[in-house]
Amino acid sequence: MQVLNRVSLLSAVALGVAAFAAIAQDSGRTFTPSELQWKPSPRVPGLETVDVLGDSTKPGPIVYRVKFPANFTIQPHTHPDDRTYTIISGTWYVGWGPKFDETKLKALPAGSFYTEPANVAHFVVTKGDGAVIQVTGSAPIVAPRFVDPAHAPKK
Image (tube, rainbow, N blue to C red; front, side):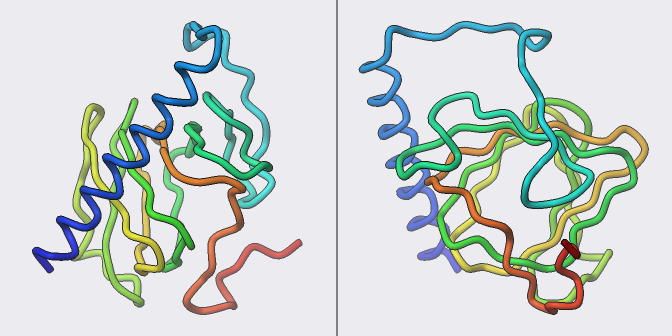
């Protein structure tokens, strides 16, 4: 597991460098939270998203935010890319494994950070205050792959 954590950390650093390089080529961006233009998530009903850097539909590095409502659960799923997460507001609860297990949830308050290796099953929960998270990864962003397909959102 320690080797996996080092690989995840190196991947996170590489993603950060790629994102910084993309910013350096841009003329720069500034915005306040009230200037963000949130839209309903095209991948998970009930969530809102906003691309902060990059375009979630086109290949390349991406930084985006996701707004989770209070008392929201996403069952075990995976993503095809390495990602890093920063909790902007609220408390985010994450657990690892192919089966939802509330005893495995770790509370991550605002300011927390974690890495998520590609294709590793995990589950998330918000409680009474919801959460806003910032994700760095690779686009295009695809819908999560649920361990149990019955948990996938219905279209």
